[in-house]
Image 1 (tube, rainbow, N blue to C red):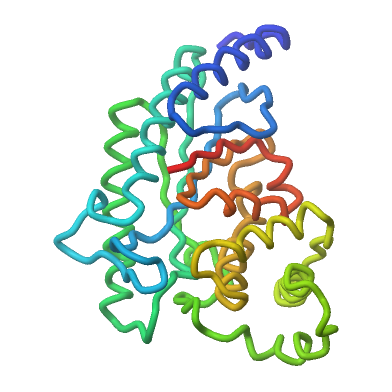
Image 2: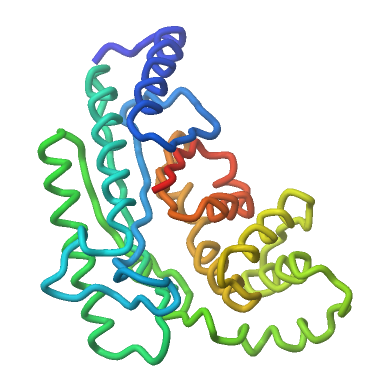
Length: 276
């Protein structure tokens, strides 16, 4: 295929983003870039299919229930609407779209002691997602692959209870922090230690933590595990999507979008953020 000139690429990208931004009511695109090359890689992280109810105690859906009965059904609808728009716009240019989906089967929020039923539920979720998105890919003419945190070697507990204490190896550090330290500063310090990161305690980063802590029913330990579940994988997203990749993410709770700021390469990626 004849390559587009730089000017043609920029012009087509503007039309493309204008179309994408009309595909969902609550959408924002961060770091818009020229996305056209040999193909467009779109990375989506799929959360487990939680049952309806409060996230702390909702549990996981199990057969015979499907995606539409889950707490995150709105996210999947949003993904499908936006992916349809993206694939159509890209296909009109003669390029291909690759949907690189990853199931977050680590850091699964579960209250209590999980058993074999919960392990089986995650396998069931993987199959439901695969059936749903492979059908969409076939209909809309884009490529689709589905991986998982466990398959990609993510080091993090499979199940996490938001009521659980912080990891035992961090207790000494937490106790040693100045009792007058702001909780958001303490959170960043503990996350840096746990993941060997260097998140700056800047005003913007502290504000991200502050907003998560202010979510309804959230306490310090719960916020730690929630944020940690994202950080366990966020650094891999730019690697999977590639240099010119796009990160498509949907959240029910708007403060969660800010966590991407903690991973430099992800912060600089083109991100399509959907409130759903």
